[in-house]
Image 1: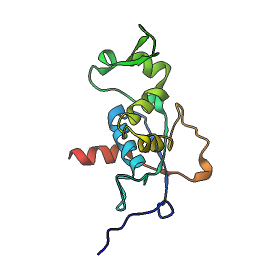
Image 2: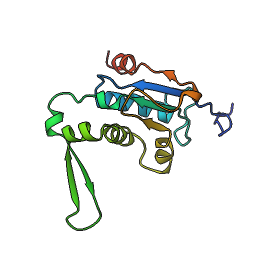
Image 3: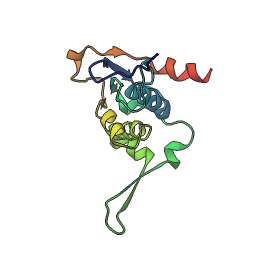
Image 4: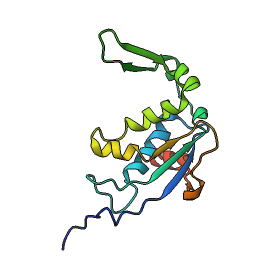
Length: 151
């Protein structure tokens, strides 16, 4: 018996829309990263991009649990000496909530060219509206998926 490996033509990509209202950022990101990788599909192959497209709406309403709002810090470096910038999580979530969700998801994907390709299928919007109605995205209940694993 031969092992089945899907080719690019065999992969069916669905569109999902996730409402981030009231969801913890990490749990939201883990559900989205799983869909982007395609780990929910029976034909998942680690070295192929089998994932779906995911739209995250209401990113400004995602929450951080515990004391992360005051203790978590986002760093970035310009590449020049002394070019380290720090942004507290509270400021990041109020000023750039889309970037906070994107970073959380991106850091859960593989750190190689395959992960970068998967990341392009993520669309994040701060409000409830998105321009992808033509793709007919299906609603994804991230609350049920994130709590069912811990039970």
